[in-house]
Length: 119
Image (cartoon, rainbow, N blue to C red; front, side, top):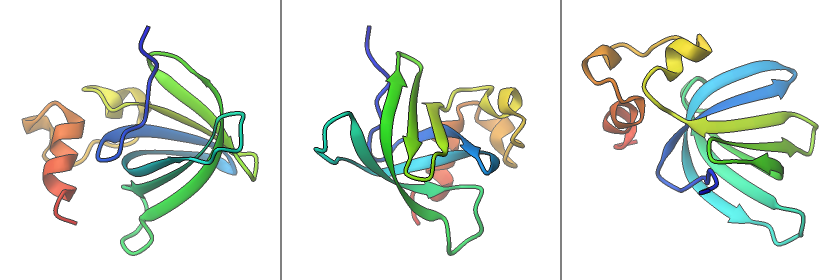
C-alpha cells in the first residue's frame, strides 16, 4: 500500500478542527521533516480560502496516522489537520463551495493550478 504523502507543488484538501472547523483546498509549497523523531514535519502552504495577503501559511505537525487516502496530524495548539487528495467531487462532498469555472474542468487540482500557478 502506498501511503498518502504531501508533495511540494500539489493541491490537496485540508480539514482543520480545533477552534471550529476549516475546510479548504491548499497548495503545498514545502514539506520539511523536523528530525525530532515521532513524525514531526513543517508544512508551508497556500490557503485558498483565506483573504489575499494572509494566504501563505506554515504549520508544524506531529503525524498521528496516515493511510493511502489521508494524513492526520496535530499542531502545537492541539488543532487536528486532515489532508486528502483533491479529487473530482471534493467540493460537493465537503460542502466548501465550488469555485466558479470548475464545472468546465472536473479535476479540481488541475483547475486550481491553472488559476494560481502564476502567483
